[in-house]
Length: 422
Ligand SMILES: [Zn+2]
Image (cartoon, rainbow, N blue to C red; front, top):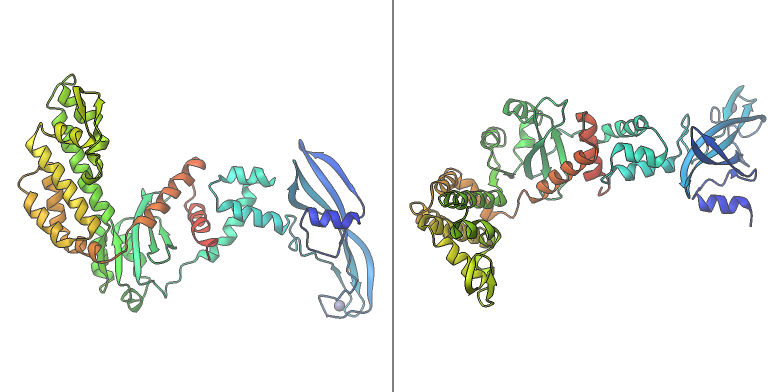
């Protein structure tokens, strides 16, 4: 079989008009060893791109250009491509033959571009991507900038179910926090806005005509009150859902603070202090999942065999308010899990005078937002997907050692979240 067959298959080159018969050599350019292939581009049947004529075409030699390809083994590959130059007698114009492996006026093969694009969807920094493909970071940025247009927001459409959240912004952005919102059904990012402030968001959402905003049925948010006034004003038909994970988080924090406050009433050498400190994980577990039947010797329980359930019962027995706060936390969390709003309301009322001050504040907050919390028991939408994206954003920022340019950052988030699943 011919050299041509091996080379085109090895490098996965689909253009049959390339002829690699001239051989391979290695060359060191700026300290990097390149594998250089020489190829000629010739067609059997040519057509003038200017006038469409396929006769009266005269060969006019070759024009050399260098094309960057995907690497083979350790070395990056360059193709020394000799494109045939032609002269058309019908229209008196010159033209060059073009290959489908590389765009006109470009010396980076489409293969490399595809590879860069797929690398951009992964958790890699721009520097790593450019080093991996032997191109400069500026080139990678340029590819990304070209995609910017693809991610323009369509102001004539909004999905019926939205989810709002925020994340820490880049250094050059107008606000310290940026706003992100997505389609709750397919979890696609709709847009990222660089400023979280209310007047800024209002101005942004007013770009959507009234009839588009009126179609929005639910918006899932965390407990950030400016969102509520924004939704009430601009999305008049939308139900507000307060994300249930945020409600659970509120109670968890209140319980934890109560535990720490109680701990601090004792000296650090006191066994009560030690128990409350060491077994913090046991308190956060759902009570029904604690093991009641297996007894072990435990640290801070001298001379006794205790089960996981005993640990919680004995440790919390030091303070009545703490114990009530614990029961309150467990009950409310179970109600949320079971989606039993009546029971949730009953427990709020039942515990409100029996718990610590911190928990009471959280209960008051729940009363304040009760209508919206109720919706989280009715609808299945939550902010889970958006929190997942926010985690991804954090990772992306960390590997890139912080993004300075908001536009690039926005495009990168769109590429990673929306491009491949389209
Ligand atoms: Zn012509």
